[in-house]
Amino acid sequence: MAKGFSDTDAQCRKLVEDARRGVFSPVYLLMGEEPYYPDMVCNAIMEYALDESQRDFNQTVFYGTDAETDKVVTAAMRYPVFADRQLVVVKEAQAMKNIEGLAAYCTNPIPSTVLVIALHGASVDKRKSLYKAVAKNGIVVESLPVRDYEINRWISSFYAGQGLKISPEAAVLLAEHAGTDLNKIAVETEKMRKNLPESRTEITVGDIEENIGISRQYSIFEFTKELSYRNAAKALKIAAYIGSAPRFMLLTATAPLFTHFYRILKYEAFTMKNPGAGNDVRARVLGVNPFFLKEYDSAAANYPCRKCMAVISLLKEYDFKGKGGNSGEAGQSELLMELTAKILNI
Image (cartoon, helix red, strand yellow):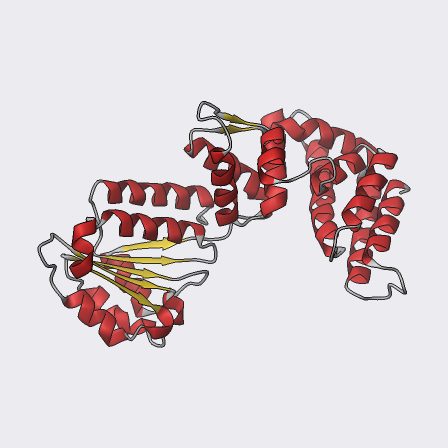
């Protein structure tokens, strides 16, 4: 079974807790396209592996572009000075000229050294010796990107881990602002928490709007919602606002619109085959919170399969136009208004 973000999250939270308790592996390989979890583990190890007074003699940090394999191995082979362990960290390790050269050390690492090989937004080849050596003798963290359809659930899970509860609409709004950039979500959340009373445990749309600077009223989220309900005046007003943004590109609208109408089509197909399915099952198939099922019921009624397919075809056409294909003299904002009007008239 493919490893999902829930598994990675659980693994990394355990590694952070182990670090707090002073439990370490002799070698860590932190890698993956999404840097949030590797950074989390690396930061925890660097914080807890040594006391402040021990770091001058027992902590060595290399950076990939300047890190030579033999120097990293030499540092790792040393013994700690007046401490139980020493820490050797290689950051941006994907930039090393011969990262595979670390495999020999990782095959038989020294127990008194904690070696952290941290790649940023990259991975080593699992077929090669380094990965196999660390997998056998240490710990590998592989952080895969969270997909668009998973991000709202990740945000809810992340907030729960912070002792907070976030409303479904607030999670959608935050996801629209940050996309699937987990570090950005974490940074924006920390910024917001500093402006809220410590006693607050429930985060609303208003909190996101006021503290992160996002307007729900004129967001893509609100745009797709008005299209779902066929509220033409509001949808066109939001489209005009979105299109007026500096450097607006049509792709920033067609991509979420495609995701939205694809979900509507998927929802219709599932409900036709499973008319008795409960809300939790239907929401799980869509990858959304059950809170949003009312909107999808309306959308399915307003855009039955034939019309939904016509909208998806239209989105492909305008995506091509937005990239400069057969768009004539129409600008990006004009194309969005055209697209919106045509969707509403299907």
